[in-house]
Image (cartoon, rainbow, N blue to C red; front, top):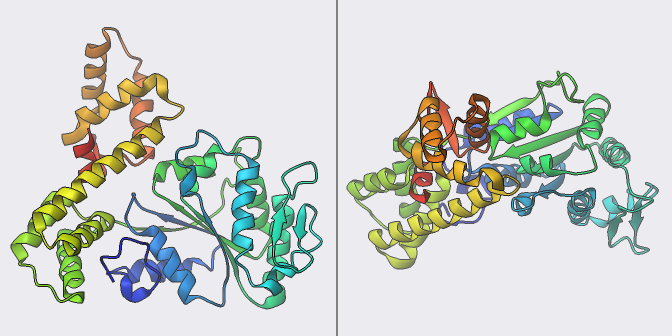
Amino acid sequence: MLFDPKPKERREDLFDRDDELNRLKAGLNYPVILLLGIRRSGKSSLVKVLMNEMKDVIWIYLDLRKYEGYTYITYKYLLSEFERALNTWPKFLRELLRGIRGVVISGSGFEVRLSWGRDRVELADLFDRLSSIGEREGRRVVIVFDESQELRKLKGFNILYPLAYAYDNLRLSFIFTGSQIGMVYRFLRLKDPNSPLFGRAMFEVRVNPFTREQSIEFLKTGFREVGISVNDGVLESVYDELGGIPGWLTYYGFNYLQFNNHEEAIKRTLEYAVQLVRQEFENFLRGREEARERYYAIMGLCKSGCRWSDVKRILEAREGYRVDDKKITELLQNLVDASFLIKEGDIYRPSDPLITKAF
C-alpha cells in the first residue's frame, strides 16, 4: 500500500521508482554503489525491495540511523551491527564463519558473536571470509550501510582501509545510502589523495523528490488503492503545502485514511514534519554547540533563499564584529553537506519545503 509509512519491501508498493531500482540493481556489478537522496526520498525502500527481489544474493544490512544522535561511535558499535545482521543468516551460512579470529559461533550454530576486545575480529578478515562464502556458494555478497554518513563518527578505527582492501581484492559489493549527501562524500574522502579510497570508481544512484505531476499521481494512486476519490484541487493543494518528498506525501495519505479529513491530515503532517526536522537539526548541532546560534540564524535567513553576502551581513550585524569569510563558507557548506540547504547558483535555500516551517 502506497500510504503505509513503513519502508516498502515489494516493487508494487513503490511508485514510479523503476528507473532507480533498475539502476541500483545494475550497480551491483560494481564494488561500491552510492544511493543518495535527501531525507524521506525513499532510499531505504529501494534497498529493501532490491533485497526482496534478489534472493540469490547474500545480504548484510546495517541500519545506522540509530546513531544520528551520537557525537561518536566506536568499533564495538559497528561490530554489533554486523553481529545483528549475520544472525539473520540461515544456520548453514553462519557455520561458515567459524575459524575467524574474534568470531564465536555457539555450539549449536544458532548465534554469532563478534569480539571487540583484545582478540577482536578484524574487519578485513571478516570481509575475506564473506568473499570466500560468496564464491563457495556461487552467490554475490552485498553489504548495505544504510545512512552511511554516520560512519564518519567512528573513533579509533578507520574503516576506509578494509573497504579499500575489499574493493581491490575481494568479490564483495557495498551499498552506501546517504541522506546527508555531502557528509557521505566527506566520509569516503574520494577526492583526498591521502584517502585509501582515492581514485576508486563508484556507481551512483540519485533519488530525487517527485515532481508536481508525480506527486499528484502518487496521491491519486494511493487513494485509488483504498477506493477513495479526492478531487484534483485538493491534491494540488497538498503538493503546494508539502512539496514532492515521498515520505511527507505518504504521511499525509496515512493521516487522511485515519481521519477522513484533508485539513486534519495536512495539520498532522506539518506538526510531525516540524518536530522531526527540529530533532534532526538538533542532532546535526551535536558537536557544533559553539556555532549553534549562527546555524539557527542562517536557517532562519535562508528560508526563502539567501546569498553568501546576506549571511555574512546578518551574522556580523547580530554579533557586532567581523566574521571571517572562511568561517561563513564553512558554516554554509556544513548545512549543504548535511542536506539542510542546497545551493543553486549563488542562492542557498532549504532542500525540503517543510524545513522552512521549522525555523
